Image (cartoon, rainbow, N blue to C red; front, side, top):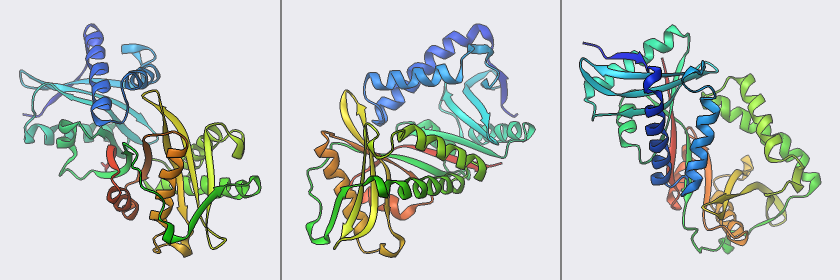
Length: 314
């Protein structure tokens, strides 16, 4: 018989919330995406944002998953922009393959009833149960958060001739326009946003990160040159991770006519060198799932996946 998905009752909400908070904190700490209290602060921020009215929050749906008299687990859902997001999927038992198949069927049916075209779930590297749910069921990797820690002491490759220098205010104007447009295209291509919503989101993030242009606090922007010719750009945001500086690559780009010459690897090594100069002992980045060549490059240099977002058309 099919699984039974039932809204969580109000009298069980507090227990669910306590268990979910602990689970989400642990997943972030075990994956390495967040350290110590950073994970606690991040999870508390998510819970406050997505559950402002607690159990009565209209934009969230928390369901129990039952198979006859057996409680399989719970699933927390939220819909936005034509996507049904699985915010959290927690199993009380190790589900069978049949139970996982039935769960996906139920979620697909729910998405169709809500006229939602895609399912999305973000999973940390330590979430083995969640990965068992997506594997072999048609989900595709939409985006990946990657981390390199500790920062290796490898120097930029001198033989490549690539040099990075601080970006000038004059160059920033054209960079900002191109970077915003390219990020919007990638957001749309990832399947998470429509073209219109991707443009809005890209513009929002650009204003958030670079309110004062090239002089924005905590932002380091560079142009990359070989033999005095510009061949790429690099943008590093300086964050805090476990109380220490953490570098995050917000944009790294090699000009289209300069690719497949090894400059991408050289620029990534230069980014690590700049991160060390800024006092960071770790570096992270985000990459879209369709960018397989970049993913291969990052993994060849030791970057590991700490979180992946999966999408499935329903």
